[in-house]
Amino acid sequence: MTLHFAATESHHVAKIVVIEDEVDLQQILAWNLRSAGHEVFTATHGLDGLALCEDQQPDLVILDRMLPDIPGTQVLLRLRSGVKTSGLKVLMLTACGEESDRIVGFELGADDYVVKPFSVRELLLRIGAILRRGRSEESTPPSRPELLPDGDVFVLGDLRIDRAAHRVFVGGDEKKLTALEFRLLWTLASQHGKVLSRAQLLDRAWQDWNTEGAITTRTVDTHIKRLREKIGDDGDLIETVRGVGYRYKSSDLGEP
Amino acid sequence: MTLHFAATESHHVAKIVVIEDEVDLQQILAWNLRSAGHEVFTATHGLDGLALCEDQQPDLVILDRMLPDIPGTQVLLRLRSGVKTSGLKVLMLTACGEESDRIVGFELGADDYVVKPFSVRELLLRIGAILRRGRSEESTPPSRPELLPDGDVFVLGDLRIDRAAHRVFVGGDEKKLTALEFRLLWTLASQHGKVLSRAQLLDRAWQDWNTEGAITTRTVDTHIKRLREKIGDDGDLIETVRGVGYRYKSSDLGEP
DNA sequence: AAAAGGCGTTACGAAAAAGTCACAGCTTGC
DNA sequence: GCAAGCTGTGACTTTTTCGTAACGCCTTTT
Image 1 (cartoon, helix red, strand yellow):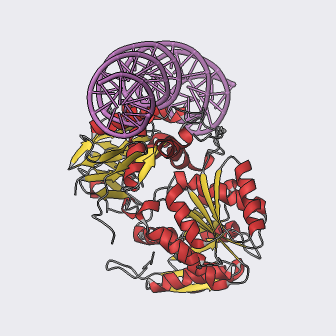
Image 2: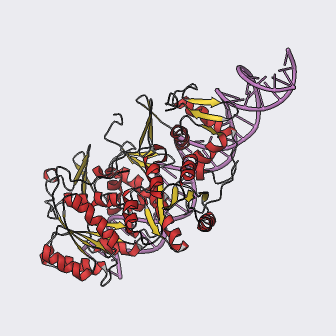
Image 3: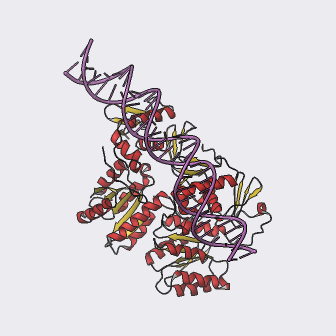
């Protein structure tokens, strides 16, 4: 069972993945971010980093442009193309002087772009800004409604999850879920086909919500039950994997 | 993610001046705007920019706040004081974290205000919005709101919000709202169907003058209550999403 | 087959979130 | 400078959600 840091009121604890091959820098960043209360995972290679992201579902990725295996822009591209990481924020790092990179970085959808060498303090400030913005999506005053398309709808078989509206439909009928149930379902569905242990579910669905300390893993069972009940599932959609955890039924029929 | 910023059908070709000293960013903007069919002129200094504007009489100026010679606010001030450039739209850019600037920016009459770092995509959307808002300017006859051009009137079911005149109608009856209530309602309605957290609402409706998280999120509740009361709502229009925030009732039925 | 462990299910108290209200500090306009 | 109206906040109430314990069924193990 994982322990969670206590969060200060105004401070949002985030899960952050750092993909950086310079170990010194990586450690400096990790240490500082952890000091700020964030949960940090590190990788030195692009592919490792991608796997880590899929596994951990972070809020933010700090991504070096130059990596041993594949370029950071490639990583960014894949992160952006995956449905499973929608809403993810990316901050790119780059060695100085590479002008064109910046263009590419922004166009690929990096949320910020920092040129090395940078002051750690500045970087932390920017990270804070990104994370804050993250919660308020597009930031600043609404200009015109039609400009904000909600491409944030997740569809999987009969299931449809609208994260922006915070609504769930099963076969066309809306199911009223509580905030926790919603997150639980989202966690499972966004990783459909993959077994998630109770500990993992507590980590993700409960996230920073559970700041007080450990919650019994049995609690998950109860919520799974409630969730199944609400979405009218008898174990077909949310499958029990005895001794391991739960899994949302995969839509894939096999290996592509 | 490949972004296309090609010109769309109902598109006015505009003349745009970009005043930005970071050449990278300036070029990114210029390139994208030109791709969208606009005529673009660039300057790296404030005074050059002013001259350029007087010379070219653009429709829109994109103005960085920090420039090598004079502050962007100065530029804005002079643009606004000149009769020759009335009707001009101005979008200001600023480095993040400078809260007070934002106030100044809006008060000086910027049409929009974007904080760096921003996603280019978002900026272009906003530029499009500003341009589309067109030359309707002020001068809205307050007597017949239903006859106004679609520019500044927002209609959603029984609700009609006239931003220019700062009036709100529900089913034909005008509701007298305070400035804050008006912004709150607008924020919710313009994002109808989407859940906005209390933090988001504070960010947007309270906008500038909420320095820091100085205001309790509970305050939002109170204003929601007042707003509901005034527009005669019992939770049908402004829906409570427990544990998440509030949502203005969507006009869509939610099912495709 | 009995024991042990894992899980489904239920019910209930505790706690959190939202609704509501009154009041005080601040502007604003007169 | 006064009165009127906004706004923010704390206290209180109501509503809803969450965590846990308890019990029983089913599966696995010995």
